[in-house]
Image (cartoon, rainbow, N blue to C red; front, side):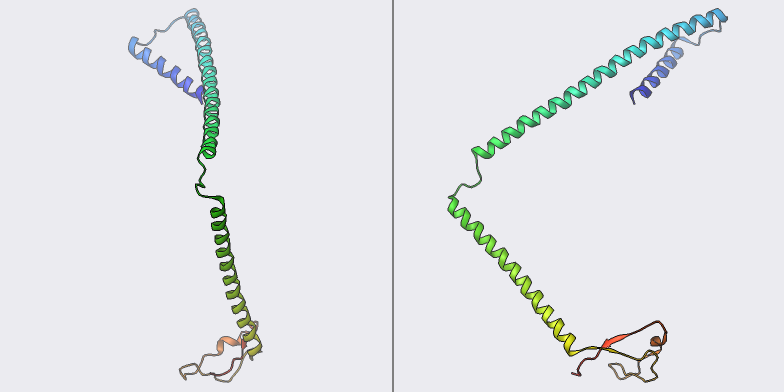
Length: 173
């Protein structure tokens, strides 16, 4: 990441100096070789400078991380000491234990109530299954079935060959 920023800084510095001082004039082959040698030395010097900056930055970041870790470690130990110096139970342990037992009793009773509700519903389901055993209807019945309001019910949906309907037979009420 910093290498790309370094190249961007090279280009910006070159463009700024060129804008401030004007473009360089053309030179012969020896002059171009001289300029290339100067640019090569310049890039080596700047690379060394940037490597030093990157190395120093890396060291500073590692130092900051280590320092942060140490500060949090010390703060954690101080917070543990706060627990020791100021416990939350400022009343007798016997009273605290009784409150815990009462809460456990309440939770246990809630579990029993939920179990009883489940048991009641399950018993009802079993009773319905014994009262209303599954009954198979003809798939393509020509009989007419009446709806709750006395009108004829459409039964042609039952005539598909792969469909097999089972409806419980319930007592009339």
